[in-house]
Length: 114
Length: 115
Image 1 (cartoon, chains in turn purple, green):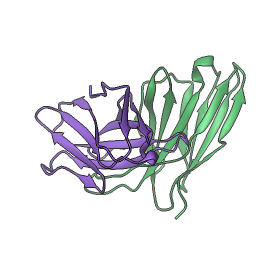
Image 2 (spheres, rainbow over the protein chains, first blue to last red):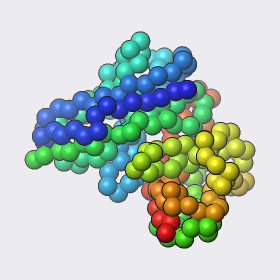
Image 3 (cartoon, rainbow over the protein chains, first blue to last red):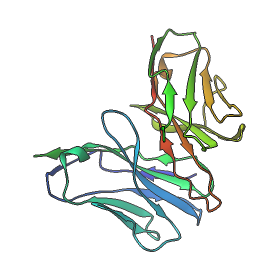
Image 4 (cartoon, chains in turn orange, green):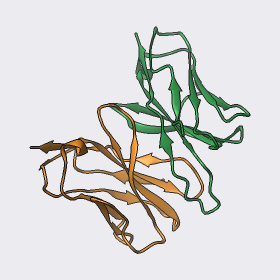
C-alpha cells in the first residue's frame, strides 16, 4: 500500500525568508504523481504544485519549487520569499496514474511571522 | 468558470440520523471524488466516480455510500450517523486526461457535526 509521510507537524518562517517542507512516500509503482496542496483557514484545498514521477526536472511555480528525489522517495517543497498569505496547512499527496484517489500526508502547519 | 460547489456548507445532525451531501463539479469535469477530513484520521479517500460509475472506494463502512448522476453531479450519503462521522467532507472534480495527468479541484467542503 502506498503511504505518504510528513514528519514536520509545524514549521515557522519569517516573512521574505525561505522554508522547506519535507515529504517522503512509499510505493512500488513506477508511474505516479505527487502534489503539494495548501489549505488555509478558509478550508479550501488549493493546488500549489505537482510533479510527474517520470520527469526528472523539478517542478517550479513562481516562489514554490520542489526537490524530487525519486530513488529516495522524497518530495520536499521550498517556499521562497515567504509571505503572510502563505500561512496555512500544507499537505503532500500521492496519486497513481489515471485515478483521482489521492493519498495525503498528515500535513504541516506553516506559520509566517512578520 | 464556476468552481466545485458543495452543499450544504454546514449541518448538524444527531446520532442515528442520515445525511446527504451534494457536489456539483466544474463544468466539463466528469470525475468526482470525495474525501473525509478529521483531526484524528486526517484526509481519507472515500469514493471516486467517473461517468456515473464508482471507480474506487476507500476503506469505509457500508454506511457511507455515493452516486453520480448523468450531469456529473454527485451525492454522498451517510446513514445511521455516529459521533465519529463528524468531519469536513471534501469533494473534488477533475477532467480526465488520456495522459493520466488529472488535476483535482476541490470544493470548500461540507462541515458535518454529529451530536
